[in-house]
View 1 (cartoon, one colour):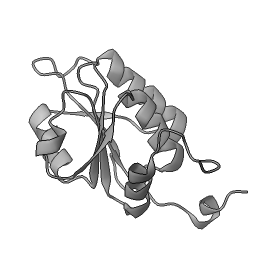
View 2 (view 1 turned 30 degrees about the vertical axis):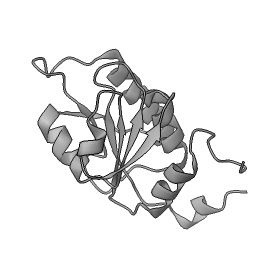
View 3 (view 1 turned 45 degrees about the horizontal axis):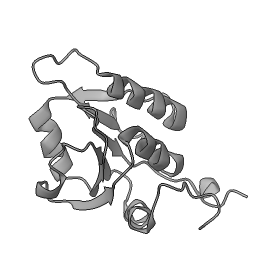
Amino acid sequence: MLKGIHPLLGPDLLHALRTMGHGDDIVIADANFPASSMGPRVIRADGVDAISMTEAVLTHMPLDTFVPQAAWRMQVVGDPADVPPVCAEFQKVVNRFAGDFAVHSVERFAFYEMARKAACIVATTEFRLYGNIILRKGVVLPNEVFKA
């Protein structure tokens, strides 16, 4: 155990977060997401839902403030205006942990293309459909590194 580290972040995910640079993306995927065929490294988070994992990641990772969008969710196929409850929860988590960022909806296959370019994919056992989010890492300022 380490002090101040969210308990859902295991060694593989901590390593991935630490090695990601400004502008790199991380995918937090639901149980139906085709994580293993996307290409990026897959980190398993069995027994963890996507909302809890998003909270854990955003506890330590800032979102990118140098781009117009830094968080995305998958659109509902056939009803792009629909916001499933899990996606509404993503928005609340992003606002609570990262600030005033909108979680933008992206068409399913465009979301897959974004995921293929991500630094890594965290495969959760989120069973709610559309429980997928992509987060773009921002800059960690020097005064944020060693908070006493």
